[in-house]
Image (tube, rainbow, N blue to C red; front, top):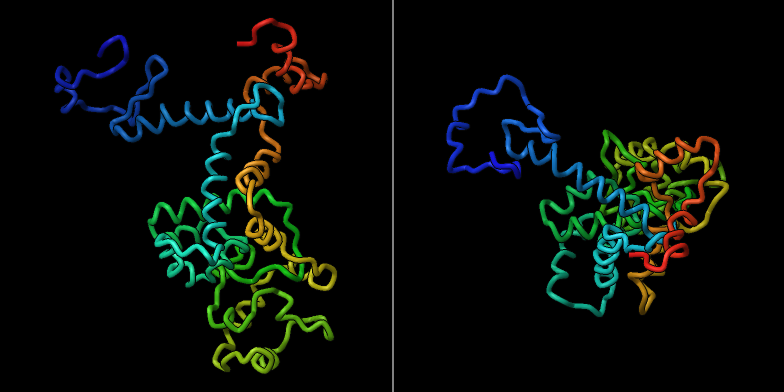
Length: 296
């Protein structure tokens, strides 16, 4: 082993028969394991995460040097593909993904409150599709969502049975989309199955599907049906993004950095030292620019 803590493989063949007495060993701040992948996970990835957390405390909301938040910037670029996908005039070959998304409602997916579980199911190891959908999910998670009668039934992580969301393709094609479409305001309860069959032409053998669905709608959504009929926040957001001609990426990026960020370890340390005194971190971060001739 050299002073740079790197192994010279040509001189370390003895390690092939090395007997480990425990799962890992730590020396000079480095944790070694009997598995190369685990060694990377225990040493490199935590340091990268600490570096990312440090950068977060320096972007615009906290003043400082206003560094671009790399994760948010990349997410915004990935989300811009959603706008291209929603553009019916765009007939590029990459839209082959439409065949996959149609199984889950096609463009409806971008309005839904989707979970990570369904993301893996939809993408099915397709890296591009997973990146776009997961980025969109991350960005829209920052919207100030509110429960209403216009909450979407399908692919909704809050409406599940056995940890699985619902999507009845034939029901969706009959224009059933929102919670209130199953609700009878006259009696302040959900329609009977016979009424649903009559109104939407649902097959009579869908009895169990209907009652499983309405029994899976949580109380906090049911309670808002009579009092709130505002459009779904995500639906409005999708319409806004689709209708914009420019600055889409800026909107997607700003939406992410407006959310509160966690303090870095340095900030937490100083707040403990100063106790009850509230520290104005925005002023602290810009102090070097005001108090010195050079800030680099």
